[in-house]
Image (cartoon, rainbow over the protein chains, first blue to last red):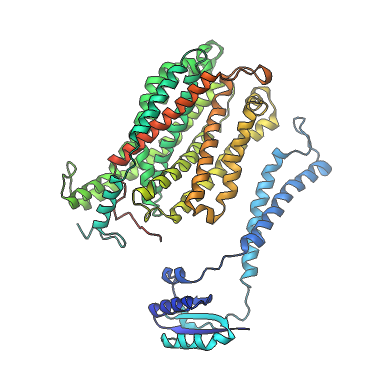
Length: 165
Length: 426
């Protein structure tokens, strides 16, 4: 069973220090809310590899390219038989173009869908740890950890000067 | 002085030291390269007689190696013009390949001009060409415009490099207390002047490259089959040339960065960026190729389809074409999508080598089929001596190219001014 604890920091350097401490102690479930884009913080945050590519984009692309070949092939064979230059009805060169276009289209759509799904959007109630001050000049550090390490994380955040919630 | 060099991450002294170390460690490959050049001359002489295979190999190699250097310079100009901050040292190593451009011009005058009649079939049968084509493809008009185009491109490239490096040369001289460049007006003034001037010359390089390399594609490659034409051929030619130039740049980066102490400036992020651009050119090359193939395939007109059949319905060229498709398109396309591959120098090096081999095969497949008579069983391939001659000429060009680039590295400023460098990742 895991639990999420958050703390509000008034300064960037203390937030950075506590993130580094948490990472050094093996915590991986760290998230932040920051008032401005900050490369120092983004660089030290754990970066779990996204699964969007494998789960969504790849299959979207495979579906798209298959559709791009099969749909024109079906239409060419059964609906509009436009024999051009004595060429076979079903052959690969002309279908490369719709195949490629559908590949791009469906990869894009699947990736977009993947981002929405994996980010669990839309969130109707928002993050319970959101603090309005994070939109002004404060830094919120959010840690998701196992139940038996909650006290340790609380102590660490408090020692670093954070307002633990 | 110190204020103007106030870069966030590199001090004046670090810049001077990096440049000193880089220049001191430029690879000492002159002797092996000269040996290769000598072998190339022998190969050319061996292939002069009979079917002129040595000259044909020279033609192919001229197009291939010359394109690597000119494409790299154009890439450097494009990075400058787009204010690319991601790899000034990458762009600089590309820019210093400009040293090969004058060599190409000399080779054009010494070999291409005198030998063109032995390689270009229509020169011997000029009476078969009528009207505009007869006028456009008259020997001296074609060679003259190609030479002028290459000379302009060379001049613009050299000027661009010299303008860009002038403030850096002066700043280095001030810091080392050595002789300043003539007419030195102080770093601030020189930088401002270089900025404006390099912008103009950079634009000149990029536009001239597109025009001249389209022209070279039409004149020196497409005209080998004078009755066949494709309006996209010029675009296809300069795009593929840039693609190969980027692959060659990857090899140079890999060879030079550790040896010359540049690994802080040229790291995985720079490989990733060059890899991404290469991926773009991979797709663009395939697009320009396929965009020509599709209407030819559909139209199936005898005067158009012969060009394709000469290559795709031929037992000798088909394996090469397959290699080009896989090595130049499919494998790079699939591998370069992966971020981890793009950030791994060894993997990038392998892919770049594959692209270069495929590119060299492609130049051969573009140039040689009309020069080798017959198809199928009647095909007359090169004899052992002719093949040896071709191989030696290729080695000779490789030597000359390496020799020139090394010379460029020795003469140029390898690490750009700290006001342009944002090292060690961003």
